[in-house]
Length: 112
Image (cartoon, rainbow, N blue to C red; front, side, top):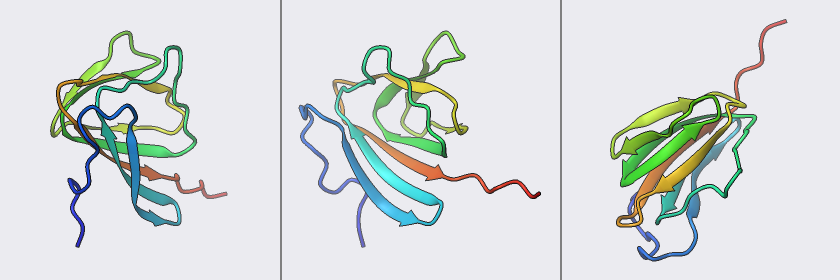
């Protein structure tokens, strides 16, 4: 048995930590640990897969390219990010460790 909070990096870690928890065809579940990091200036994620993300611990600001302001997330908040919906992490709390659970999935092909 494993634990989502096991082996967290120290609170002053200079980089985010990504840990794949489960990888199956068309599905990846990962833990992301942020300690004050954000997306680089001008950078937007544009992923071919869909993503469902849950902020388990901490606080963060996640912004979509088609929205003017970041959504402020707190522990327990989750959202769906459709494939190719451009988004970025504007900020994560520098005062506490933010733990994310991200579920990446490949959409099923449309029937012909």
